Length: 332
Length: 234
Ligand SMILES: Nc1ncnc2c1ncn2[C@@H]1O[C@H](COP(=O)(O)OP(=O)(O)OP(=O)(O)O)[C@@H](O)[C@H]1O
Ligand SMILES: [Mg+2]
Image (cartoon, rainbow over the protein chains, first blue to last red):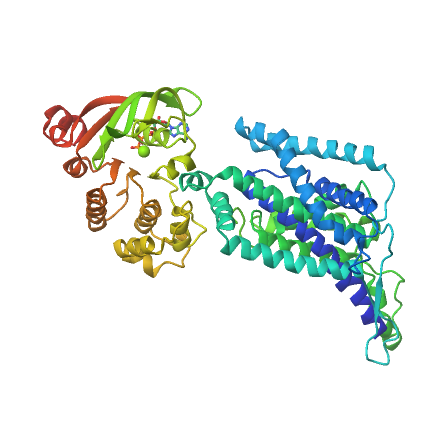
């Protein structure tokens, strides 16, 4: 029984945590691709930047969370989302819009976004230094230990408050995005622009507004993902490089340009990672005696330090087997 | 005063100029028909009017107001609608969503317009929840036309609305065009079925190499032996 609890903690909860983060990042990447037609490589840094904005606000008002009984950083997150959205729109105006208007090839946009990545990394380090930061400034992380009602299960299921907040936020965000895209006027305009930008303009849709909304959604989700991930572990300025590959893998696995695909892709990559580094020896241990096996102490598919290779292999596999992704890509 | 007029417009897609002086003008409630060989610049002329092309010389006027290089969404607001020749539906959206997008700028209730579009094109009503990408070429053409009508335009630009349609549907579209025009909508359309189109046209414009070759009433062009020889298939 304890082995099962271990599995739940190490695979189900961890996979769902990282899957939610990847999903939110991948939605942004996929939306930007479907409206602006380029791979936004600075997305990981939009996440770190958003998280640092949250850190800044949390440090400014360290007691704001006490009143509502939530982590202060979580209470500050919506404000950080607004600020980061403005920042994303500013980056677009300064760096991507001039290129777009000069009708450059998509690869030039990609290069520009790599430039923005490097710039954001520098800016974040100038203001916040290079060390790892804790988003709990004046409060501490609450950890829930859930007991299972069986006698054999002496271990407890462990889930932290930031993880619960992450799950709730992800579900709300995905449902809200779904209703936005299928029901609202602006959401439909976004789908129309993604489908056929010229026809959208001919129909009277102001595609500049659509571009702005795209940055707002991407900026908000990136901030949320960055903040909630940092709340769960720690905020590091180099977070973005670790997260960029899995996010792009998730977007491609799901089908580029497909927000629901991005959600699926995020969880596929997230669970694949946790399953790959999970030590299966622990689950098999009860059988060891019965069958007189000689199990090695570690039976993970991939050593933890090589976790980053998992999305890479998934990416290669999907590009070879089903290049369009799980849901057919290219349109919203 | 002309409801829509192009005055000696020049322009292209960034490289060489495609349009080298196009002059067209229709009055309120008239039908203008543009004919010409493939590559003559017919579609390019309509795109230029609708702000999808950089016009480098000349002017475009709507009711006497200069609209040269105006953003498309502003033109829609001024009562213009355009059905392009290609890629004229949102393939991933349902038929009804396509029509809704046509009414994007309308703040009032457009339910009655939707009903009248379904009344014009009953095929679409059965397929309303189907993605437009799953329709036949002719049905897509109806969606495209329906989308443009949703704004209840005063000026309608149509680029080969009957392309790929069976004769039955083709006549249906011509009837629709005449009916819409009877309601006072100015129509400027490109047509390959030159004879049939000129028969309903008040004005006709024959383009060649990006400029007017002949400009006259529809009737006069139909009876002009030179036009008949080169552009109406004898
Ligand atoms: N998007 C584009 N980019 C560059 N050149 C273009 C583009 N579209 C059309 N052209 C060029 O402009 C010229 C005129 O094309 P246009 O589409 O206006 O012809 P058309 O008269 O509508 O012909 P058709 O009867 O075949 O539709 C052609 O020589 C074509 O090569
Ligand atoms: Mg054409």
